[in-house]
Image 1 (cartoon, rainbow, N blue to C red):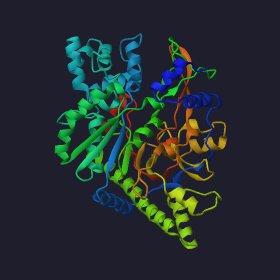
Image 2: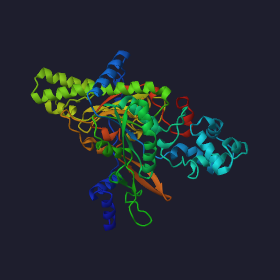
Image 3: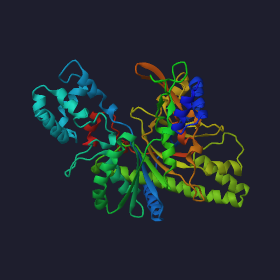
Image 4: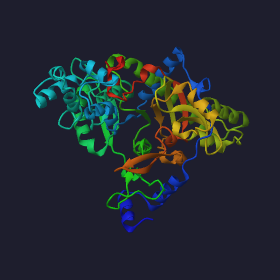
Length: 499
């Protein structure tokens, strides 16, 4: 099935022949659906800390940082913004010239509210000889949209989301990249330094680095800190081979294999290379202007406080297990694993070996928000490969839609995953965990795509906050909806939270 040329192509990416054969086999067999126990809810897997507890957690986090620990803010920022502008690309290609759909009408009616308005107006004057208002008055709406999207204009259709102007300020508009630098200073700085890591696609790396270099010093002065800003790309070795509908390798016109990015789960490799005690993870587009940041900053410190409090207790128990424990202590540790780390043995023998395995692994605390109908994953109590039950974030693709009981759990779930994680990635002896060891490789998924008009099957690796962290200790904390403000379409920037 694989030619000598294929093997050469595979080796150039740092992928083994065995990995490719495994991937092709996965197209044939598919991935098993997950076995669910229940949707997580407050009182059943989700903590909702009261005000006094929140203050204690914030204090715990501040004390932890004062101990000289290294904290990193990790921002997946490689996605292009093209999906954000799907409606506007459709308008430019439409067979009508004036805004017709509700989306188009809203975009043009409120165009002055966009943070990129001044930049777009300037580029329109340069390219069209008229500003936005004049173009609209002359019925040249498509020229305005084209200047936003196309390379000769702002090129927003191709740039990464992190480089778009999201929010207006007196001193000028800010990109999400800048908002993340500010957040890093406000809750992730320790020892007078904020470490921020962006994962960026290869084609945008130079531009991203240039923009960061232009902006970082201003924020460093404003917040009285130093920045350590690093970057990485998704590794070619994490790409997956594409297949035809009959599960044979999909080939390009020149006969070469087609590889596709393995999805955000590939970033577990990037995360594994971060030197840190604690790592915050948050999507690039989930940012707010300064006037709304206090709530975000408070809750980031709360979930970090929950993390370091639980980690401290886990470390103490691991040291006790090393020293030897009696039956009463064994029961105390087992209660902590079940009640505080939400891991149920489901009848497995609870001995020192079992408890050590459940305590000595990476830990994450995930903020979850009340479900308001946003698409995406949710928090569940799920069966693991070893028969135990613990908390996981699931995507709809991991759930058997033919199972009425599971679908009821999914549709009636009270909470949603906004990708708001804080992770502890060292063991109780201070050694970093090897994060790929904790991935559940059976939790990938297959989707249908096309290339050059031909259908193909694409394989996504276990998602970063799904199967890639399946064997971590996981705890969910309810956070306010105000901390979750994603931008999926350009008109989302017109929401009050982004104004």
